[in-house]
Amino acid sequence: MVMDVGGRGMAEMEASSAIQKSSDGETGPRLWPALVIVALQWAGRFGLPAMMSEANLVGLILGLVGGLAIMVWWGFFSGAQLGDRWLALVATVVALLATPLVLHDSVATGMQGLMLVAYAAPVMSLAFVTWACLARKLPDGARRVSMVAVLLLSCGAWGLVRTGGFSGYMVHDFAWRWSLTAEERLLAGLEEGGDFPDSVPELVALEDEESFSWPGFRGSGRNSRVEGARIARDWSLAPPVEIWRRPIGPGWSSFAVHGSLLYTQEQRGDEELTSCYEITTGRPIWDHRDKTRFWESNGGAGPRGTPTYDRERLYSLGATGILNVLDASDGSLVWSRNAATDTQTQTPEWGFSGSPLVAGELVIVAVAGTLAAYDRDSGELRWTGSGGGGGYSSPKAVSLDGVDQVLLVSGDGLTSVLPMSGAPLWNYGWSGQAVVQPELTEDGQLLVSVGSRGELRSLRVARSSEDWSVEELWSSTRLKPSFNDFVVQGSHAYGLDSGILTCVELTRGRREWKGGRYGHGQLILLSEQQLLLILTEQGEVVLVEAVPDDFNELGRIQAIETKTWNHPVLVNDILLVRNAEEMAAFRLSPPLQ
Image (cartoon, rainbow, N blue to C red; front, side, top):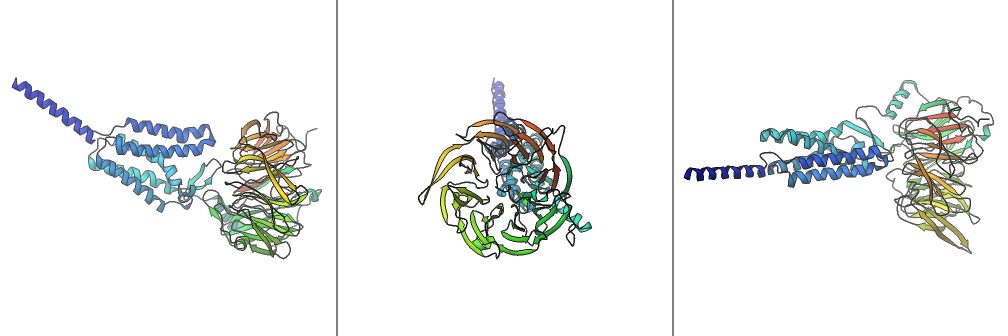
């Protein structure tokens, strides 16, 4: 009997000891919660964006949340030894603090410095949980050494890559750190064979050369509207024909065209260029260079604005604020100013992005929400005025109620000034992003993309005596243009809403249809044929009907490769496209008889 009691006592003591060991973590952590967390984390981080590309930002957030959940599980609910729990926390902090020392600048500064944490979280989580599954029976020393190694390597491995920036959906373009960028390949090729000639070559003559005109950003009215040109609607029978392509330095500039010449802006190493090429062959004609370079990790290197052609001169604003006026025939400098210095404006995060506007004898530029006007001939600063709040939009000339005025979208709202004096006329205020230009409809409405969400609003601006009034007619979230300009055809607007082509009517902003995923690209309108030419973010050119009845895609071609944010240009039958790596020209067939 005593033996039985003693046996039961020994059994109870052994059970108690086993429970204690389990609670101390000696038998290993409880893993099933971590496996569930990592599965959900990876489904949210990678599975959701794979189904809906516009959900990538949500995926990044879910990846971070999953990483935090793994830390909470390990620290409080894993049942691991206290020493292991503290060691994992310290090793994670050390990895995240030490890795930036070996990162490429593009990764270290990406997403305002949050890129490493956002991208490393799911990888570190998976690696850590995998380690926890495999190392649970290892001796203490080996287990802890391997834990630290896994955390340091899964984070530090990001030092092996660089990024060329992200897409409109915040998807990064990764490459090995030691691989050459497109700009470096271009510069290497130039060192071997050269590019720009010592003198201007003889140009190929164009039929009806004077009709080849696209004076600057988004055309003559800055509305991406093409009048007169007519193209084939059936690309299966008459597809666009490539006439040339060539590499180009990085930048988000579009084109200005006059006669046989096209003009654009690009970056080459430590020099920012305003460049001239022949429109029919792509041959380089001349360039003007400034010793300056702008780069930021999200959008990459190079100028953001588009040059403006006016009366045999070319006007360009660089990403650091240098305003050049050049002879359009040979690139010789007429005068130059630093608009950033003149307005005491710091270079914004994405660089100065406005394109110069010529208004009579003045050239007007937008410098991060501040307007500055210069004498066209002498370069003398005539006036400055602020829209306030920063911004990346370009000034736009309109006539409202019979009064010529210049509009600027800034972070504080939509501002109107008199072009000759800069005197303010009226303001419509808000707080948020400022990228997309306002559009004037046929019945006099002003359409503006407002605030951080980019919702579309319709305004009625009127003058009574000397006072101006601004009435909001409607506000709609059915079309949120982000940084992608929209076009107006009759009583409807067409634009990219989170990368999906959308048509809204202009009476109340109601959506007519939505279809076609084109990313954060740009588009132009052929008004007479009711057609849209869309240059997608992936470099495709897509032809779509601009009619309110229904979405109808007519054709598409792969025009250029890699991320494309630049606005396309159509002059007569020549379509010009470019991005930060290459540019190309296509001849579009006339309408089929």
